[in-house]
Image 1 (cartoon, rainbow, N blue to C red):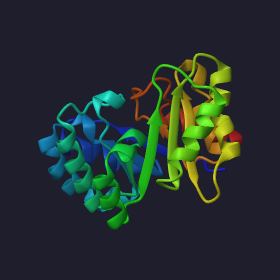
Image 2: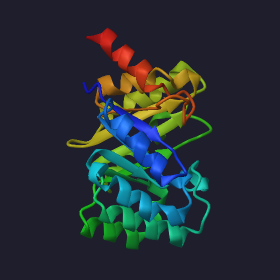
Image 3: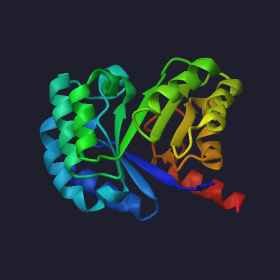
Length: 224
């Protein structure tokens, strides 16, 4: 069990990003940097400002088609992903759909030995367990680090996602939970089933059902 946290930071200003990252890493094990909330031309400066802390950062550049904020063309996004990889973050979060469609990016990340987190989200529902297992197996072929997040309408939906921890391929790391009110507790339970950390906010939730860092710290204390 890993009672570890990852603070999601979504800022448009490189300086504010740097400031919040310093604050977050004083209390959290990791931080997720949502570069898609930033104008693409500002990303190089932001990377320079946070470079010394990237060993504790998960870097994300989510396109609008995958629930993110990045709206420029895909070619531009791929070039920025490659730039982020050059800074060797703890993990570079790249969508499963991007990985399977872009062989050039896939080979680049392999050559640079980037620690890849392959992610897949369903923002409308939670598929049945067989589809989730199939998705897990497909994703495991590209990285040992996998993130599967769905939207829960019921507690049962959250349990479907958590059941994936029973089917995890050997030597793989899985971050799997459900968004929404019905999936909220899966954000805590996933750390008890094997997730290396759970995503939290410094205050206002970045994603549906997300706990704050203070809330999760309090819950983890209760479990001791």
